[in-house]
Length: 212
Length: 212
Image: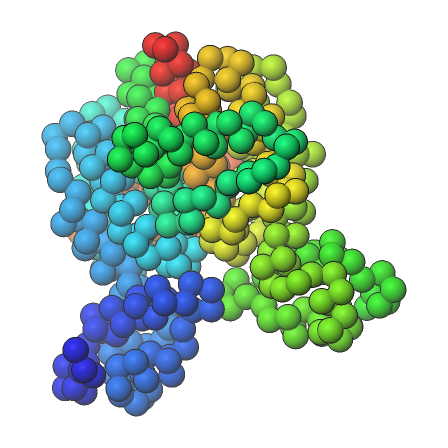
């Protein structure tokens, strides 16, 4: 690949490079000087494209949001649209778990793609009968489930392994049963929890809407 | 308060101090030297109680797990028990959002309180009719929703504010409607999404169990 030339430096390339640095070092994050070194440019050159580290994170959000938009197949049924969005959203963040905590607290830019995705989903939910306030809560609730599930999907899949611990027999049996079921189904334990939880969440939302 | 004397140094005090440092500085975390300075001891003294930074995080997990256990009222009905657990769990982590990403990937200690909580919940779920594998997925799904919701609860409650943006009218209306509803109910916007989502998730789980 080699170092990109200074001439091609862009906000997008800075965001992509920061994302790679975050992926490499889940714990400590990155400094602007690390970013400049990785790009083979001076720190001052970065500031021609991003005002500060917050702007780099905002660009990372745009990169992930565009992937989600590209991967989430639209569907005229609100619950199917939410399911597709949830799957694409989880995949995008599970690939970059170190961004979850930061982005979940970073205010949305006034030009963010995310706002347009919310607008589209909120319209679909309201057309189906959800009130304006509820449509926002539904989106945020699904998003919360997805972000927690993305962290779970990216965690070591044996992190709950009780080993030869003798004081938690029911948990140990449940842990191993889920692992075996996942293997049979060609999925990960995290996939099983995500699918079961998302199905239940959407089923519960359908019921609530039906009751009006 | 003053500095604690070296004589009272303990794994628990180290964990509590690390938690305070994480709360103060959500972005960058802490180094063992920061921890020693905050406690007024030498770094080498820390290692009489914790092997490394991972052990400090494991102790933080125990502190939070004990709070959750103390706050989650037991209930003979599995869905009520899950609801109480989810509320206590969200409160504990919303107070310390910077721990979420790290702890969600940290393998469980063989003596962790968390294992006993899982064991208890898994027993209750299996007694109610859930299979062993499903009981584990139910616990992890609720946990994922809770962790995402804890991040949302600790985020600035106006972080999604579309401001005077004109291209997302339905999202903007939904955003303001949720804020107003929250105000009327004396809750936060995050509370509304959490309650709606948890209700729907539990309702969906009850239905699935009922269908067998």
